[in-house]
Length: 354
Image (cartoon, rainbow, N blue to C red; front, side):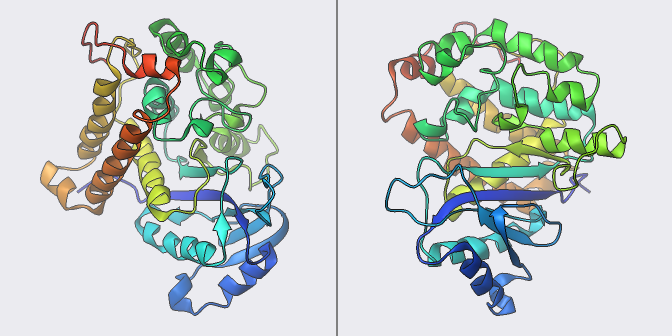
């Protein structure tokens, strides 16, 4: 028997509705036959998208900016959904596209993975995993979401790396070196509480990091009565903000699967040795990321055979194929000089301590 939990996830989709307004979208979706909406409902909030325990919300998002042709900027926020029910989400995405949904560079797609059952040590491992493989994960995205922006900051940017070094691509090798990585890992390891872990990154608002634990920190603070946080903020989740805005189901499902697998597999990762190694080639690091996810997921099962028969195995395979294809595309098209140097650095010592 596996010890995997059917943990929940939630998503936030920033987009434009070009054929209907936000309220009309919610009304039309709720009027669909039950078979077409799988028990889901959408509440129109008339304001920013909000989190509700039992229904989606549709609201306005001021960070979504039209270039002149798009209409009705919005944010669609899901309620917590069981990972085993992932395919039901496609019904909402299909209805978005049916009503003229579109995205531009101002849009993002955020994924929340429930982590209330994870210990402080296990959450540290999730952050360390994302930190170590950040440059590989970055190339699953177009340049607008690759390194750092106002609403999606690099975890290394917030670890005493200058904004210019990341945002202007002047010195990516400086950002992704052993000293930087190990310094941040040591800070993460020393954090004694979820609050201290949340604020370990030197930033005005850590909730805008690509991978952040705002909802988890506030959940534990609320449980301990040390913070008067609203339930809608204390979600108990780890948020992954990096993905570009999209209403493409293959991109959405692949990213949800990847985020789930990062959280679930990182429980079996190491967080005690020197982890950073910028001497490992980009290509090898890419292979290591997905192979280590697979190995760690298998550890959650009693055997490889059980893993291969579980639906998580096929989701892992599909997500890996799609994301590797994305990385290949973006590392072969339109890289800056600094990005090219980062991707094509040589394997100097072949270490495998990540």
